[in-house]
Image (cartoon, rainbow over all chains, first blue to last red; front, side):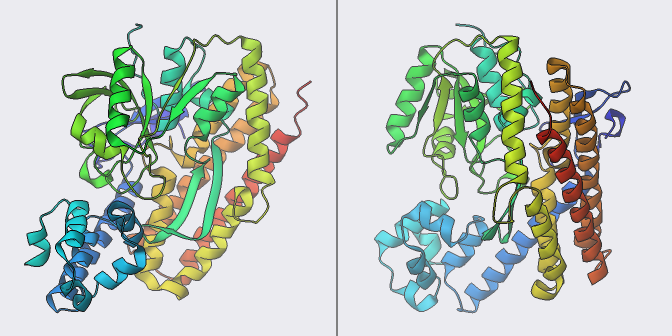
Length: 131
Length: 336
């Protein structure tokens, strides 16, 4: 890549920082230069977020139709999977998987709910009275 | 205390390595040198593991290794702490800052408040330097940023104790001594770094790491459309591109950065062969970027035939062959 070819596309970097790229100057020597972003990877990042939003929406529908507990929704919204959530709450993964089911969720005590609420940075009330 | 000089870098760990070593007195170190001496170039697709439900792929060596290897090569004693207690982690950092130390610090980006939301996934192997504290605010030199930034104590606590894969557990590190290095030592360090990188790219058994790992991914790509369907297969390709190009790589999956290192290495050691290999690494970087353009065609929905996946895979096979050739050439260099 030549220094003059370092992409200067619009990207989420805008207004935040420019990133360092390594490219060849006119004498054919490497130099660092700054880039505002590259559309190819901005698109990849955007697609990743479209997928995140799709998963959140899917979780919301499952919770509303009582096929999943609110934990699923907040887990997706916090970009977590069972592994990350388990690490944040200290609750084992297999238990979390059970708590994703509405029947098990209904039986959870406040102590456990508090652990989930803390991980999601919400109140217990938001878990109990999911809207 | 010497005033802290912010160093912006393509890759966070290189930037922190350069910042800390320069602060400790080593004026010769640059980002490409740190990357090459620390044998940072790599490729691996870890089988059976998924990240954000996509393939777990990395274009660089394991987080922390560039700093550790560079320090070890120059015989620099370093202090490295992890903590059980958050309070203790904060107290000790504050005490070190009062003594005028600059500290390398591993953090998660999910709660890194000065990052834009688009980049804040649960990624825990980000590195920055903390060099001061004013009241409740830490002064931070994040190598990704053009300028230094501030971070509140509350946020610092969150990012230092982020959870999940590579959880930092408050990890801090810094050189314990002044560092003065001769040009002769740098020459030897370059040789060591290159030899280790040849081993990593050519001789790790198992077929998922190094140049063989690139072919492993190519084989996977050919199966993705049938196995996962269009949407998920396309997302997987998007993940490859993000790992390859996202902030911190210098473009082309670190290949340009390594080419820059080889060019510097040639000037320092007088080995002209390194320039020939540098040229090949530049070409490899270009090929990685071309493959990203091809994959973008798929995840943007313009291309969706099995043949299009095959083209992406063929491109990776070609990169693998070229990198194999480049590292075999490096491997054959007679240093004495």
